[in-house]
Amino acid sequence: MTKTDKIVIYFTGDIGPNRDNPDSMFCYVADTLRESDICFGQLEVNLSDSGTPLPQARLPMRSNPETARAIKDAGYNIVSFTSNHSLDWGHEALTDTIENLRKYGISVIGAGNEIDEARRPAIFRYNGTRIGILAYNSILPMGYWAEDNRPGCSPLRAWTLYEQVEHDQPGTPCRVHTFANKADTDAMKNDIINLKSEAAIIIISMHWGVHFVPGVIAGYEREAAHAAIDSGADIIIGHHPHILKGIEVYRGKAIFYSLGNFALELPFAFDKALHGSRRHKVIEALNPDWAKDPEYPMPPDTRKTVFVKCIVSNNKIDKVSFLPAYLNVKGEPEFIKTGDPRFMEVVNYIKDLTQSQNLSTDFKHNKEEIVII
Image (cartoon, rainbow, N blue to C red; front, top):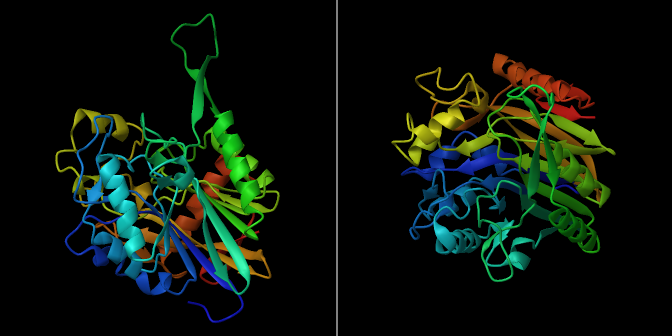
């Protein structure tokens, strides 16, 4: 916890230990994470001993309820549980997960026993400043979104349109267009507007995007992010693609389209038969570098990650930066220093991704941090 008038907020990518000693997942980063006032992560796994996998769950992800304690001890005091895995083990496991996290004082956003709970913000109060955080999900297997009488996620659905470019040339590639669902976008905008009366700073977490494909940002992501900022949001934190994506500055506000993985087990920790299965080969085809390293049978891009540092004072965001990190072969994150060649590998990767998507963002190297201008 900081002792100055500044509020320090850390954001990390996807988390989800599934091992006998869940604390070991954070062994290289916990001391740093605990320095923050607010530490946020995207939880990918259910924390429950209950439930049965739903038929639409591609990779049912579940971990021991004790993992909630390890997440708290690592420094997190808020997580989003609005994920394409939140209902993998059914309604009971979702409810268990929320209760297990809250038992350790961790705020949970983006999911709930009905839609109003899923859309409810978390509000933190420090030094007279109120900070509100909301979460939404665009990656929704059938039935994973909450309704008035049904548990699930806070939805930000999107539609896909495939346009045949050459109408007289059957079989030629098409353009892919995506559009945010108007009703869900309007609900998000109303949530933000209503939260402005309660919080000076509004943070939006988005579970969205094109997984494993380097660079690509779908059209609906920009549409939704800009709508959120136009409505009063101060920063957008994206998750789901499992790799880093570019960073945009829109109207002076930072949009991180994906923070990638941070402390998430390799998928084979949840299903030992996954590798080589037909359903997983479809996913592997998305990234040409999949499984080239026998010690780490995932795309090497998934090892690059960051955590975002946000400084708040006088009821506004003073500085936004990111600090590079790297996952070892066990999926455990380690912060890296400027003298380590991997430091600039991560920085240049993000710069290249940002440029590839025509995002006009300037970066400044300041000691161990890369500041978003």
